[in-house]
Amino acid sequence: MNGRRTWWPGVKTKGAALAALMLGLVAAMPAASAEPGDRHAFLTEQGATTAPIGWRQFCRDFPADCRARSQTIDLVKADRHAWATLIRINAHVNTAIEPVTDMDQYGTEELWTYPTSGRGDCEDYVLLKKKLLIEAGFPASALLITVVRDRQGDGHAILTVRTDRGDYVLDNETSDIRLWNQTGYRFIKRQAAYDPNQWLTIGPGRAPAAVATR
Image (cartoon, rainbow, N blue to C red; front, side, top):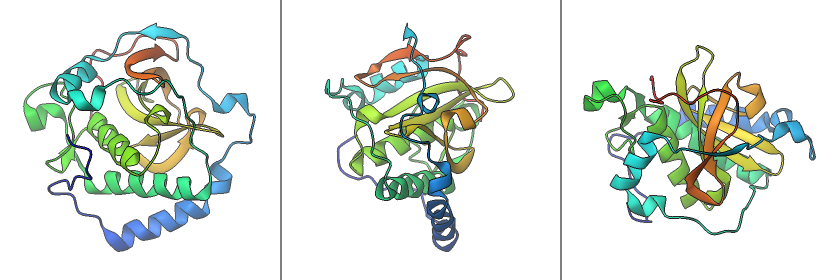
């Protein structure tokens, strides 16, 4: 992929409904924010682990998007401008992309890619959100693809945004942006801030072999 903003075939924003949703979420920002210095708002990294198979496949297909980043580790300042951008991109992708499994779309259980068809599963949502946020000026080191187990124990991918007020989650299951400890998920592993190809354990248990179930 090139560095220019990409128009995704089949992606259409439902303007009025999306605008109303965004206004409501922006208004709710103070209630969603953690207090500065709240250590429980930040995930704890516990050591190196293996990258998901799907990430390694994605890097073979999109090597330019998997290059190691700068050693500078940045946090997003959780001000209203950043929050509004997070809400806009999260809600846009959630609204524009139709959920479909890799098996139904590609005939395989696991394939990480950009949802250029306008359809995709959880990793595809995450990949597009991360790309659009980087294009919007967010530091790549603060946007970490993360593997969790959901409330049913199934594998699921989300995007963790590292801010000065804690680790927030962008999720295709909801347009609410929540602190990691408000999701009900069990966190397994995520990309390292210093290198997207290095992955770190962030919770107990083993990551599922296949991430997406929807």
